[in-house]
Amino acid sequence: MSETNLPEGATNVANQKLESSAEHAKAALNAAADASKAVSETVKQHAHSVYETGREHLSAAARDISEAGKAKYDELRGQATNIAGQYKSRAQSALSDAQAKAQSFQGDAETYVRENPLRAVAIALGVGFVLGVLFRR
View 1 (tube, rainbow, N blue to C red):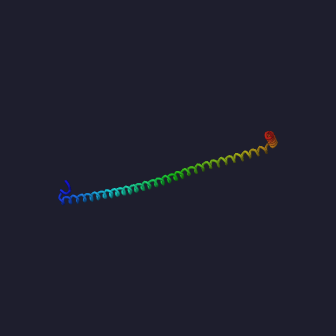
View 2: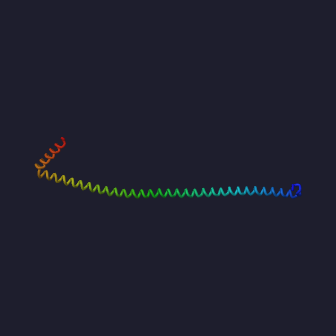
View 3: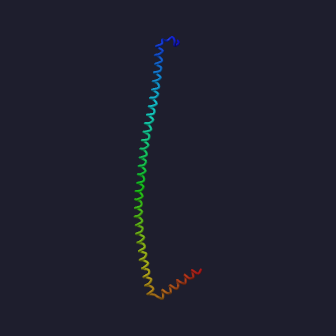
């Protein structure tokens, strides 16, 4: 059947319906494109929000780690200062003891020399002679 066999009103109605369906299809495609854009923007916004939240948490974690490191450093520094103070005190005590013993030996030597001057001179000459022989070689 050709177009000429159809009544003219039916052809007009069919053409109008085809044009209407084409317009509806275009509108549906435009709506789908708009929906796709809306979804894309929503996803972008959500991803950016999640990224910023993660970045804030990482910054906070880095600050916490830094503060923990500083606190541990201060603690260890305090312990090292205490230990150094203890060793300093022990060293001063050992120095005092050594000085006291040296003064005691000096006093004993002076007393011995005063009580035995000839023996002291003889010992000094003997030690001097031995050292002189050793240093000549």
